[in-house]
Image (cartoon, rainbow, N blue to C red; front, top):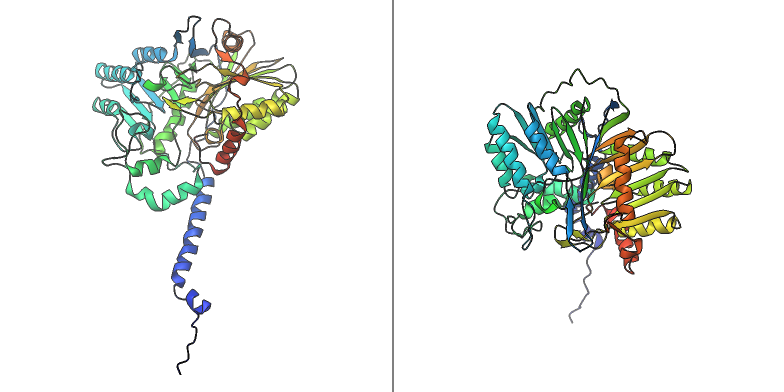
Length: 491
């Protein structure tokens, strides 16, 4: 008689079969955690997160672009920023340096935008041909090469003319999506991004196909988001890009002169230092610049913008009026500061983009719609909010104006959205801080700008809060909070 016995495996034996796999997995997890921690908190490169000394000047020029519907429904475009930049190119005698986030002429099928990027390229090339010894620099983000999938013909045209073209290396910056970036840095960064792409270009239907490796790089969501234009005579700090699909966006800019030009160049040297080297043009302030005047200015980059914004909001009190014109607002610290300022009696008025389109692609209103609902509800309506009346363009402004009951009024604006990604030393950003007497022309121009679009003085610039507050706002609020926690977002 044959005895049948049931065989059972020994747990201890099975666990011991592949100890090296378990050990390897543990080491890999520990490695990824170490990469996440280091890349999140590592020291910033030298010169990043910069604050200039305070200077006194006689004037700061306020420039703006506005798109809005006229009474007969036709779209109107008030545009000052690009035209002034083109004029400065013509007037420059010693050097030109541009740092611009978006710079390309890609469009979606059926779109027809002004060819501003081509016009600007031709202006710089013509300037270089006329003055071969002139130092001309163009610094930009790798988004314009589709994250190195394909060369940008406009940038290649500049290179052929002898213009220094620099694609910013953002890898030395801290990681804003550490869970993903740790995996990318460990496994994928070594293979580069260039080659024959085969994936559809999401930026534009007429853009080149993109490699898988480029999309993997894109998912790190890091950028040189600065927008600054400098010559030996003047400088413009702007919220607007020189970018065809952005040509009709509403934006703001400040033009300044004097010693602060040297500080702007110093901050751009930091970008060159992390991107392969080079030396920014030499600048010596004219002897006529005496550092006197009624206006005080400072140049701020990256996290120093965050510090200045929170300081000014925290100083606001009863009798003050705080204006924000903003494409994205999502920083928890800024939102908390706004609510506290409202409790102190500050009158707060926000003009926000409804976040419903991006270069021809529909968006769902995140982050501004859930943020607007939160600020309105938590302040019991004390924080007043209006939506800019966009159509196919964006209200791309990033500006804060504190009209104080006593003392100088404060204005701060440039490239920086009030979001964690823009304010917490992840992206490269730049803003100008200005303190000016209430009766100064600059101050009056800023005040008139906000009053005009808030009150719809000569067109329907803005809409009531309830125009974009719908039943799904609550669900969008949940998604917005999850995106903030996980960092899987562009804001």
